[in-house]
Amino acid sequence: MFVRAASLSLLAMTLLGTVARADAVLSSDNDSKCVVRVGPDLIHVTAYQAHDPRAEFCKDIPYTGPVTIVLDYVDAELRGMMTDIRVIKDVGGGSDASGAPQILDEAQVAPEALDPVTEAHLPGRLYPTGTISFQHVFTTAGKYQGIVTVKNDHGQVYVSQFPFSVGHGRRGAIMFYGMIATSIVGGAVVYWLYARWASRNAAAAKRART
Image (cartoon, rainbow, N blue to C red):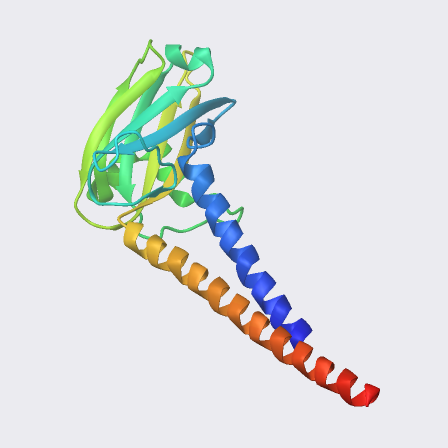
């Protein structure tokens, strides 16, 4: 029983460590940016909020309201390509037989089909500085998709997407502190079982000596 309780406590603390590391990755200076592959090239995506302008977010933006989204080209050749940016409400979407999201096909073939679920749209243009920055006010908590469409001089079009959520900060905090509570309770149970086991062993050893 002692071993089982210890294992459960260790599992709880391991899960807590996993959650803490995941949060640290999204908020650290080095790993806060989502890396999006668009064709052969890469773009970094970072989000900021006025609640803490120094904090950087990637897949999970904690609060609704104004959000500044910044896209930085990793590859310089993107500066000579037309880049179109959309932010849409994630309504589930579908997948074709190969598993590729149909939403990407729509963005490339018939982008107007996305207008009903579009939250923000920056029409295609060149960004010679290699940085795209815009602000959008998210009034509803939920899941969203950023869609990046680039077109080069040869007429090739590449479309990619990056999913993110907005307004789930409190839920994340509840889960985090719940894991802390689980770890504390598990540790207390392990300590109580160990003390009980040690007491019984001491009593048995005393009886054996007498």
